[in-house]
Image 1: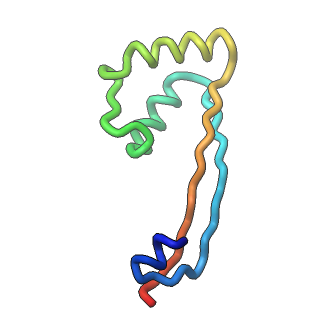
Image 2: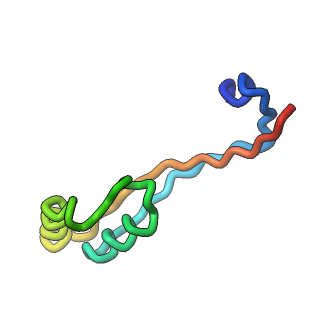
Length: 79
C-alpha cells in the first residue's frame, strides 16, 4: 500500500485471494494457457511441447495437476 500512497493514490479497498485450479487433462491446461495469456507469456504448444508431454504423462500416471495462484484486487483513486 505504501507504493500506492507514494504514487499519490488513496486505497479504498484491498482484497487478496488464493485460487486453486485443478486440471484433469492436458487439453484443459492448453486451453487455460491460451486464454489466460499472462500466466505464461508467449505460450504456444510448439514452444512448450516437451513440457506439455511430460505434464500429460504426469496427469495420466498420478492424477490431476493442481495449480495455485495468488491474486490482488486494489481499488484506489487519486488523493
